[in-house]
Length: 277
Image (cartoon, rainbow, N blue to C red; front, side, top):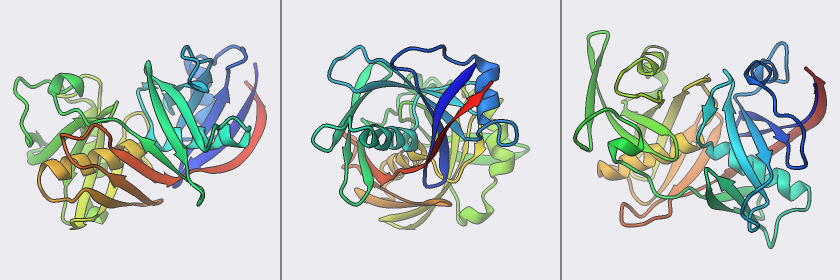
């Protein structure tokens, strides 16, 4: 199989994009893993797979595949990269791109400074929506890992997130807590684990362990989840700079009465090519 691809990144969170809108066979799980492999393939955290949209208002339908070949529901940095890819192809309309994501339409605004602003929808805290295997929704949950009690907030940004508040993000227990959560019965679909240090009410530092990938340089949905949980806990304002290892994202959300949580950040084209699998 010969595949054409495009390599992009959002704050170092990198992607291989496959545009299958005009046909062509999609890779199987093993081939996705090969594409994502940094020694034997192209290398990426996640693959972006475009197919023809059902809704004529959208330029493309976008699917997401983790580096381990498992399917992801959403990727905030990834959709910004898709918007920039479509803009490079001359497919944006009045500075905007519309994508089909999980059967719904998402609007992305291409800013003059090279950043992309995305309506990420409303955070969902109901356990069934995350999914989180608890009977009652509360703002804070607790879980013991290796004899240590951890407090976290849980939210869906189209994919599941657990958010932990830490005093120093550089010493956050990603290597132990992140993998342990993937085997927890609390998260039947596994979970992305974010570790948030609150600098002040408009600035946090964040590291994220992504299911199927490990720690990444940045996580767009993770940044949204951190702000959503921080707002719910009363420690953050409506506009927050989220400082990630790869750079900064801006998150705007007025709170639970507001549908639209907006994420703004860069998206960068790296190169394009073909690969024989």
